[in-house]
Image 1: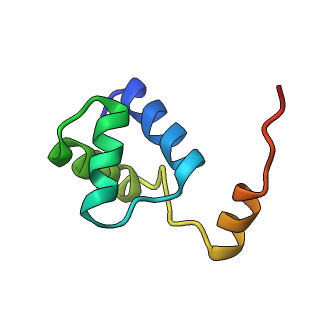
Image 2: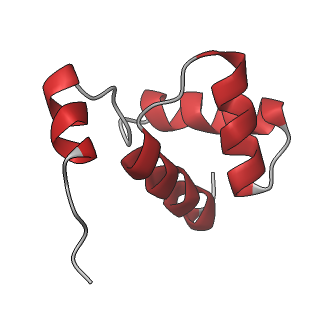
Image 3: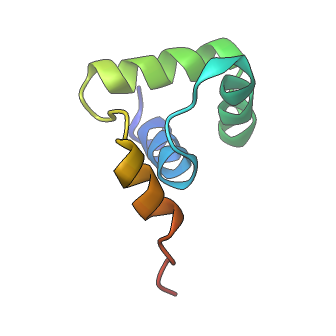
Length: 70
């Protein structure tokens, strides 16, 4: 996985949480410009490498209520 791929994944995850299910993989693929299989493999690899982990419900709620600084 390239650094640019990691950045795209981290940006997506930060905004939307860890994808679950087929439709979510399609969304990641569309955002990153990848085919669905590449998106799934890249996310799985990022989790396996310890780059990403599933957020707790509390962390997801905190993120959803976060307003980015401009």
